[in-house]
Length: 130
Image (cartoon, rainbow, N blue to C red):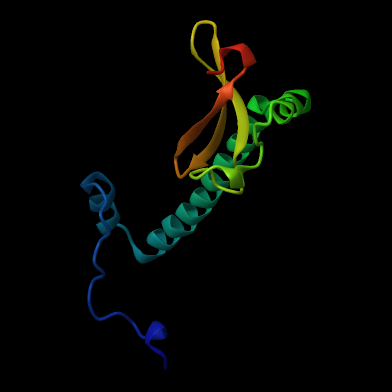
């Protein structure tokens, strides 16, 4: 019999979670805990997939057009994430942000865990370049 199939002899150490989650779990039967574990696993998978769907949707809505990408390349501004130090090779896309009224800039944007990161590329208006 391997270690994983042997019945546990000590109570497992609880993860770092708030008491309002842990205390009710301690009061549940083994069958109900199995049901909770199954549901929690499925819910976590769905939330990860939903986060990816939302990130893909945001990228589709905010990515620059092919014409804008060509304009950057004509200005000798790289549209290859490999040419930027902190921009990941996968999942990054170019978007336009308005930092203050009338000032539009190209930025790389990508998801990093639960947050979004971005890196400046250039002004949209070539006349604003220094």
